Image 1: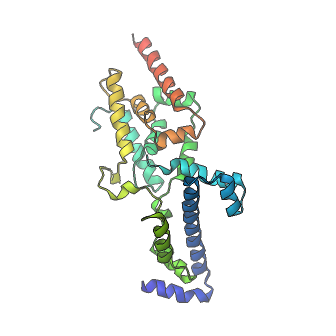
Image 2 (image 1 turned 90 degrees about the vertical axis):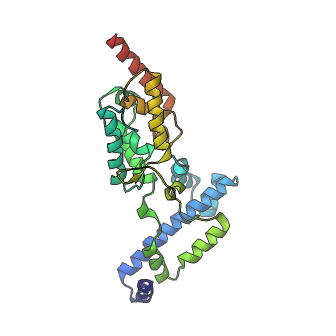
Image 3 (image 1 turned 45 degrees about the horizontal axis):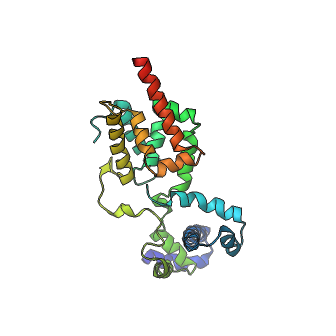
Length: 76
Length: 193
């Protein structure tokens, strides 16, 4: 945890290594949250169009991004 | 479990382990068995796969893109990096779990935590184990003493698993592949008779 505190205080140094690491982690978190929300929306009956509208992307884009992942989501 | 496997069929299992390790997957699944199977031969199984237009390289790419490895998990280093810009990952996790249940931020398959058979240190995924059992059953059905690659393929095709999803992803109907294998076996029998 000490490392984390150090890292937090270093963030103001505009060190690219720290900043880029944060961007990469944020992207991971973003992907995770998007998948979670898309899966939930589909589970409760949202259309791909409605999901795309909320994400401000095209229906094709959201479908392409999540269809494969959803195909593989169930174990096996 | 693998006593009746021919050396070539055994290579499906060892090759599957290698593919899983190469992709940094921490389990052996039907998807790895399928891709390793395609690398054997030429034999009845690989000829049937080619006849249906199955592209092993593409399957491998699909797998690398779709299936997550432990490196994709949000870890302590990510938590620290997020904290540096004022994002509290623990709080995000707490809130998503409140809405979507425990482990909501972890998308990886849940069977990991449980005790599983292991192969070369990799947990042997239940579906993959089932595929092996089905391969044995196919060999018995076909009156064969040993398990050949085609029996493993027939076993895989009996499941609705990652392997069949990889096949369908190439617009190949698993039933068509199945009949190609059966046809190849029929040709073999006729030639042998």
